[in-house]
Length: 87
Image 1 (tube, rainbow, N blue to C red):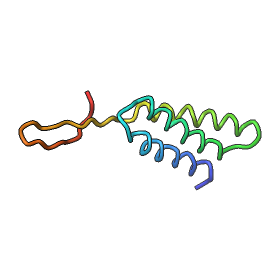
Image 2: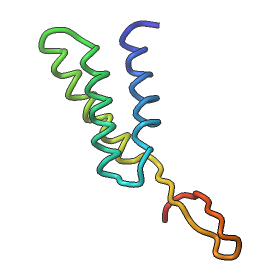
Image 3: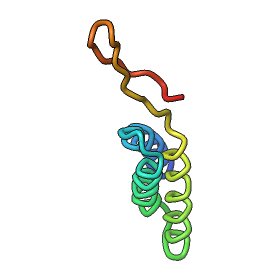
Image 4: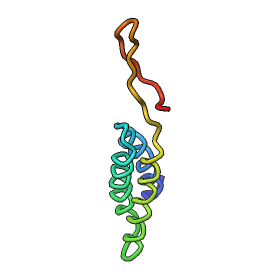
C-alpha cells in the first residue's frame, strides 16, 4: 500500500470515529477538518502539499458534518437511558 492511499484510508477512518463523538454538528465538522488537514499535509510536496492539506480539510469537514449523530433518551418507565439516532 502506498503512503498516499494509507494516509487517505487513515483520514476517513479517524474522521468518522473522532467526528462522531458529539451531538454538535459544528464541532464534528471542525474536528473532521483538523484531522483531514493533518492527514492531507502528509501527502504531496511543494505547492501540492498545500493543495492536499486544503482538500484534506474540506473532505474531513464534510465527513464530520455528516457523521451520524446519537441522542440519549430516557425511558420514564424504567429510568434507564439508551442511545438512538437523532431525529
